[in-house]
Amino acid sequence: MESIKELEKYLEDEYYSFAEIAIGKHQQAVEGLVIEKNGNVYDFCASERGRKTVIRSFSKEQDLVEYALKVLSAKKWYKAHLVAWVWSESEIHQAEQELFNNDIGFERNDIPNYSQGRTAYRIFVFGRDVAKLTEFKKKYYRK
Image (cartoon, rainbow, N blue to C red):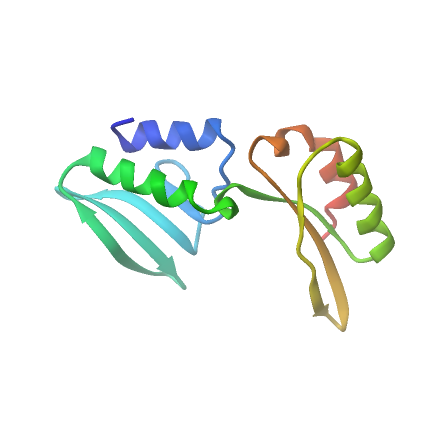
């Protein structure tokens, strides 16, 4: 893989989440990583609260791509997709059971006292499994 465009296609094919990755046509990430060409250099940046900080610059696009892939591959959360957001413990247990029955790996990540003392119950899946969960998300994603 030699170009940012090829890296972007790879990330799409492997179901990376673009919630925290800005690359190519995927520019909706307000905070997270930014992979871009900037003049004659290729930058790997972090963006927080609208402020972009260059972590590393490269003179060769392929070097940026190799570095970015190493960073992205090392952290499973770059492949995390939020598939369940409910307000009751019984519903989140039901959702967990469905995922378990369908042999889909997941991680639960609740937010206590999210809204007016209520807990937000959340489930994330990683990578390709999100493609199997269109109906599941309709059922359990109620923000």
